Length: 489
Image (cartoon, rainbow, N blue to C red; front, side):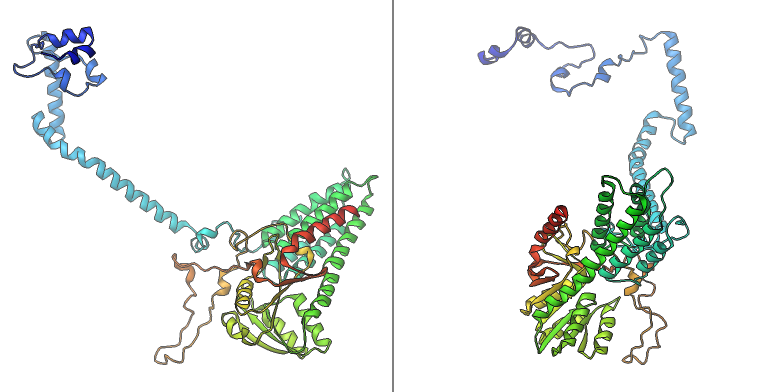
């Protein structure tokens, strides 16, 4: 007997169904509850499937069709090598069907592994030996001069010099690029239906793209190109418009003025400002080779100041050897160290003077790789660090690491392919080749040859520029002042 609580929440139909006894169908067995309440929900497909008739309810034609279907199924089982009985055949096919998905999965995994190995084998050796998290940096490549017949021969030669490191240093590269563009501008003759001022930009674009493809441009070179495009746009906006000869001569004169004012004379002013910080008895350490630092040290010697120089160098370019040769020829007392012994070289140093490729907006110095290591070691020893940098190298860019933007050199340059004989192992035969001569054949070996690094501003004491001695964090102020002066003139 149901409780009043159950009767309160039952619908009228549910009450009638609950009060009535269980209805038994002909197929249900006595003593078994109705399956509608306890069995799982019946799928829609099972509800739509008509119930199978018994043999007694079938007609003669239906029984004949069923027998023919069973006979065909038996022939199929015999042809497949299975027992004639449907029950025994089902017992044998069960484990096989369970094993089929596993076999298919194993075959797919094996196929994927084979495809991966084939792709790895087809990949060039230059790709498999690259550092995966520095793939965004351009790899060194030799320029193709055969497919660039429309370019000026001077630009083609300059691209070869850049790619082979025949011209190194930010000032030397900028001057060579601007002088080459000056030749291109002077010899360019626009088409009959165009003016020089509006056609020269279109003519210079493939030359700039070619130089950018041979070797990534330094930040100072990008600033020079940005300045050159600004000069071209100013000529286009002249009212009344200039003639072709006037526009050509004005652009060539602007390039000559930029080289003279922003590079040549700026270096002379930097030398005059830097002489204020060098006294008798100084021991100056410099890293690599900077043209303005070299001229500063030579001018200090001409002034009769007694000082010593320690040149720190590193592989693979060994630029410090060229600086050392010129300083020794001028009669300066010099010492030569490698970068790995920087702390040994700093024992007697009183001042560190280095060059820079660019000075960023946040005061960081972008220069030859190893500069940051020298600056941090000098800061650890409480030694002041001076950076000589022209204002045209002040870049409106912020960078806190050396991985976002950099240049990758040829990794073969840091591999010593010459065999080295070790006298401590005389029992071993002399080696015929270096241990890293076949490093490209090792898929798990990668060599990295970064050319630049970023030195944070806290390791820089001051920056020597043509406008005076300034802290490195004042770079944005100087750049803004030049822009305002250019707009007012």
